Length: 371
Ligand code: BMA
Image (cartoon, rainbow, N blue to C red):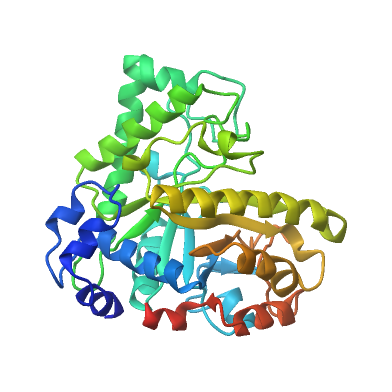
């Protein structure tokens, strides 16, 4: 489909010139036939070059505000009028081969929805709120400040961790389209590490340990034959370039440079959000250009949409000022009434998401036919 079209338009030389952090896939590229990670890179690059931004939403097609597991439904579809261009998912639980993730999304359903999103021309991205390999406590358990160190230095913990990554690899390798071809996706491990709320956060490991953890994970996935993944680096809000780059694992291990910045405090918190997000996005877009990477607003949102006009009045101007390939807003929980970041039918910001979609720079699923 569209992938083939855009790929066919590029010469092999051009493809080789695109900075390559995804294993050896570019070498395998022949004209008209491209490894899935490279095909995805070409598409994301062309979105970024065109100055457009793909809209994303976490867990969009599997549940929403006050509904769950109803095939075909989507809060974005029911308000903006289309599925988002990017579906975001979380793999927490795959490390122990659970059948569903930490929010109850079955991995079989996720696999089917990833293929459906790919089929409609959209993109899929994954975060990983994994449990730790020491005592299996969840990502937010930060009382043990030595988990990363133990993965790297304790043989038994390291082996347990490697087994967890193998389960992750099996999932990525199982993402296939209707014809049995692997689907290219984005993986965003060890996110928000400039905060200290996850066991891999800033105060929980040294910069070198963080980089070593990333490298170990990446090398294992490569060894397991995972060739359909682009890797996204996504700190939480940062003060400056130095903080953004402090734990950057290296150009050869990263494809996408992103940032997570949330809006807290409704209308009163708007100025702070705009300041922090602008600073972060300015850093991301500039450094991504310097490093030959794809820029992204990897997570954002205002929980409960407690001010009017958030999408067209707050988010859109940020995206116009700092062009990124995609933006993701977090989930609309079906079982926690105030925990939502996208509009839903009859809820706040319905008009705002319509205006956001109507803007010429935003891309939803139907628009992806051009990329
Ligand atoms: C958080 C919240 C949690 C959820 C987690 C992983 O930000 O939405 O409820 O379990 O993300 O999706």
